[in-house]
Amino acid sequence: MSKQIISTDGAPAAIGPYSQATKVEELVFTSGQIPLVPETMEIIEGDVKAQTRQVMENLVAVLEAAGADASTVFKTTCFLSDMSNFVAFNEVYAEYFPENPPARSCVEVARLPKDVLVEVEAIARIK
Image 1: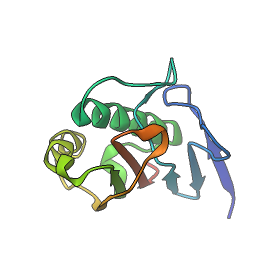
Image 2: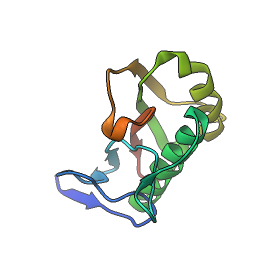
Image 3: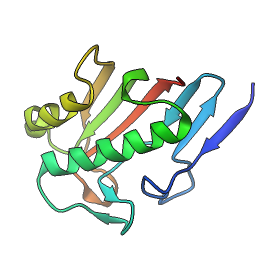
Image 4: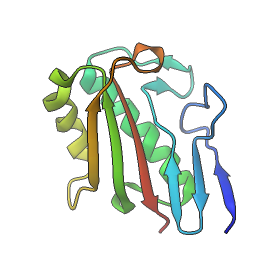
């Protein structure tokens, strides 16, 4: 079983000792994506909806670099800094999984990197 590191300029560079994703056989495991704008590495301005949209765009870019896409995701883990943002988060998240959404865990955490409002990671199958 070989491991391939996935990297793309379409998503923020890692801000620590980790890869954007790892591909093993027909699976890709993404690192958690936060709402950094890839070109500037700055947090996108706005509310949880704006941050969620940037997170999901980053996630899709990493998935595509690995040969997957949103339709091949079968599990996500979502981290919210405040569960009162759950409904707004879901409104944007649902746009990326309009049919047959993946299994998901969604939890509130005490703090996220750079004090962002949301982070999402995924496991997907390569197309």
